[in-house]
Structure formats: structure tokens, C-alpha cells
Image 1: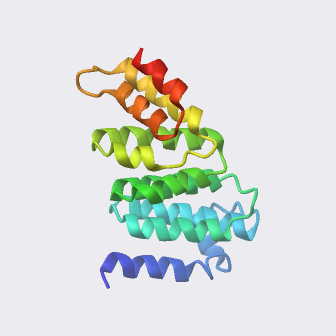
Image 2: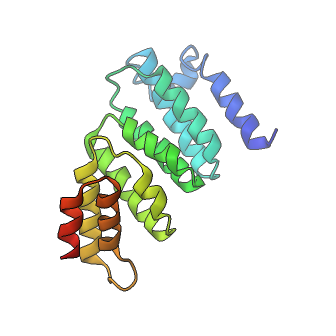
Length: 183
């Protein structure tokens, strides 16, 4: 087991006692104890920042997933945690996992931001088959807007977003929109 993974495991085990030590509460949480679950999430976010400095994506994902598990349903940090997991999966090239993370994000604005990042990344890597293959439940129009916006803002000779849109519509059996792009 690598040193970073050992540190990750140590921080996760330490979370059980983090709220019982007054010094740690004061040092890590600035004495703003609100509720056990929110404080744990705040602790996990601080630990995630430490691991981001070392590009430890696997540990960041593990810690953020643990934080989501411990978070209250109304915790305002849930969208941030989902976005963190999305970004780490995307950087690791786990595109299907990244798509599922963006789809699970409770904040619709963050979902669209993550979708934009996914589109840009997959276009840069020329993985358009992957981009077409996702179901885009409740995000079909967002994807169209993102791709159309990119198509208008980049050189058509380098990235043909309109060809992608045509293929996307045909693949999703939306012939009317596909036909519109050909004309």
C-alpha cells in the first residue's frame, strides 16, 4: 500500500474522533460546531484540499464519497462534493463514472457546468462515441446548447461540432433535428 493511500486511510479513521477533541475542533473547524454531520463534511473538505495538492485522485474520490455518505440530505456542500468526484473521475479518464457523478449532482447549475467540462474534455480527446453513448436524462437540451455554443465559438476546421450534433440527433432517433443540421 502506498504512502498516500495509508494517509488517506488514516484521515478517514481519524474522522471518528475529530469532533471529540476540543483542540482539533478549534484548529480544524474554527470552533463553528453546528452539527456532527456538517462538521464531518467540513473536515473531509479540508482533507480533500490536502490531497489535491498531491494529485491523489483515488483518495479524493474515496474521501468525498465518505463525506456524501455522512452528509445530511440538506447539506449545502453536497453539490461541491459531487463536483469534486466528477472532476477527479474526469481527470483519471473515467468518463462513464464522471457522467454518473454529474447526473447525481443535486444542483442543476453544477450539473450543467460538469456537463460542459465533459463535452470539452471528450471533444479534446476525440472520444465522440463516448459522448454520444450517454443517455442524457433530463439534460438533452443542455447538451445541445453546450455543443451549439461551442460550435459558434471555435474554428469549424478544427472541431466540427455540427457534425457531432447531426450524429447525436440521428443516434437518438431525432431525425427532424438531424435533418435541420444538414440543410
